[in-house]
Image (cartoon, rainbow, N blue to C red; front, side, top):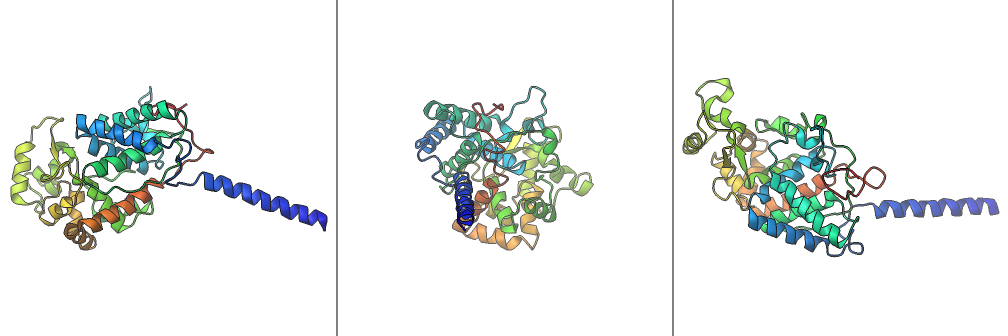
Length: 327
């Protein structure tokens, strides 16, 4: 009888220990309250200063978070710089990531390390910086979950076929986002991140000159005057560095104008415009176009889900000292 009691007690204690480990490594807003209480203020101040230097910081940081999360989860693997040029950032789909996004996280990490060395992950800094560029550009100021470790793998080969492309239709978008347990509403809301930022002409030139493979054909879902303006900005012989704003009206403000643009035929990518032309996603676009609060609420919910993808713990991750290389 005594032996059984001891066995039961050991089992209970083991469960308590395991539960404590699980709780300790779960994502939670207060994760750094004791170990680095000033971390959020430090990151936000860095982001504010960076935005003062260049507004490109806003879309660059947001896009960096998306590209990181879709490949091996939210683990800052996209920040790794490989001497062999074979890390995530070296893949063809990531070569267009603006350097200001990387610089924002690297600067914030340096400032955080000065206050709390070896405590805060690059993945969490990227998550906080993303929230800050959104709120500082007019978007929602939401609470972020923290406690991620940095990933130990970063390979360019993992990127191909795992990021949404500008020519995707709704079926392809739903499939891509569905792999990460993101539903139709999540997908449309996250597409709203295109309310800020810019794109190089090559990413949408087919809609202006070769739609559906027909030479000289303009995509009929584009507003005619908008298509003409895009052709002037992006002639057939345009240089590879020329870019235009994705939202032609409020390009550095995080708002719902992106969705009113879709209703009016001003979606820059076919993967944007198709959200309105496809009857399955159209009602969501119309709702967000009519109600910015509804868009903000859905976006916050969706980006929280994105930030929970394949979270690394102490068992399969690390707290990098330098965001660009493994310890």
